[in-house]
Amino acid sequence: MVTSRVSGFYKLSAEQRLELVAKERGLSEEEKQVFSGETAFPLRIADAMIENAVGMISIPLGVATNFKIDGVDRFIPMATEEASVVAAASNAARTAYDLGGFHTSLSGSVMRGQVQVVDLADPYGAMARVYENKQEILERCNAKDPTLVSLGGGAMDIEAYVIERGAASMLVLHLLVDTRDAMGANAVNTMAEAVAPYIEEVTGGRVVLRIISNLADRRLVRVRAVFSCEQLGGEEVVSNIIRAYEFAEADPYRATTHNKGIMNGISAVVLATGNDTRAVEAGAHAYAAVSGRYRSLTRWERNQEGNLVGTIEVPMAVGIVGGATKTHPTARVALKIMDIKRAEELAGCIAAVGLAQNLAAMRALAAEGIQRGHMALHARNLAMMAGAADDQIDLVVQQAIAEKDVRYDRILELTKQLQKGGCP
Image 1 (cartoon, rainbow, N blue to C red):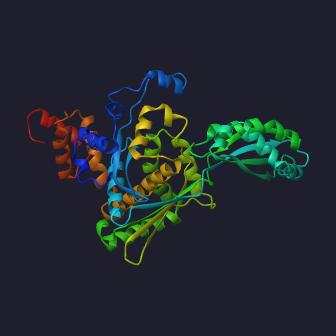
Image 2 (cartoon, helix red, strand yellow):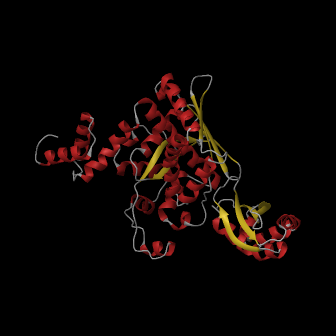
Image 3 (tube, helix red, strand yellow):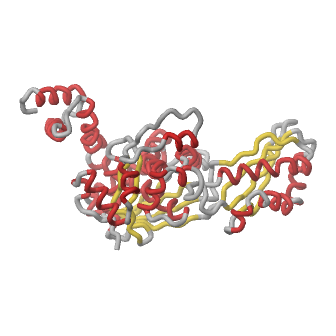
């Protein structure tokens, strides 16, 4: 039975961590080499994915532990360049593990395709005609993707509204498409393009834009978890975390950084699995502002036992078929490590990491200050920048932390001392 609760995982070498995960998830030698980077990402695949390809850029790929999601233990691959993100998510997940871990629910897998119609003599009359021809519109859309329809998806409904701009009022038609296990951009955009001529015929107007919306408000994921008051550091820490959340809920300047911390976790998993980080980030931040004021994506409160209860609700347009999720070899291995069978499982895992990441950041702020943990990990990057050899990095970092002086100039000085034969 796979368990994500691995004591001392961070103390293992990178090679030992990979071996442990590979054994638990049944990775082949080839998959291990892909994940470790020993098998280089082929330039021919990069050239097929984007135009003018000349090479690759590598991002560190870690694995978060301690995640129990809907009763299933999962290792969570995270691709990020920022120190402390993977460790923070793992530590936060540990405080929820014995209290049941994370529980998820989803609103569905429906995406919106927008068709903009202009030059209308009677925009409201045109909107009525669109609804009158709803079935024909849906049939024309679904004719473009019979495979999706055979899987239970496809265009399910339409919505329409008029944006009034005086004589330049426009009609906007929303195609509501169940994209199932795909993110859905290609399917939705193809349908919107295909139905545009018919929309012009029905409305008497001119179609301009035909494009998916990344505000995926019909594809929401909700996650709940209870975090141990004792493991977080006691009642005062819990109270401070709730006060920190209230600050973010009330103030957009704080909410922006608060939600950025959530996205540190979410974007790392989205990237690791070959999904569209920009689409997910855009949708999340737009959803944070749907009330008319930019607010926190999470909610935090105390239950009757005194433990901390966290919830998150966020759009999550991710898939496990199509795009880089299938063409990128590392993304394929990442999904295998997570043991993902459906897109909604992936969405739940990603949002759970976002909730854990948010808790970790607020706990650091409330209990010890964000710099203590973050800068200790950042010190390793600084030591490498200063030219410390592999066997010197830990010595330099330990001394800098002991001095509480994690600045590049001091770390450079410590590195030079060590390389000259002295004690840092």
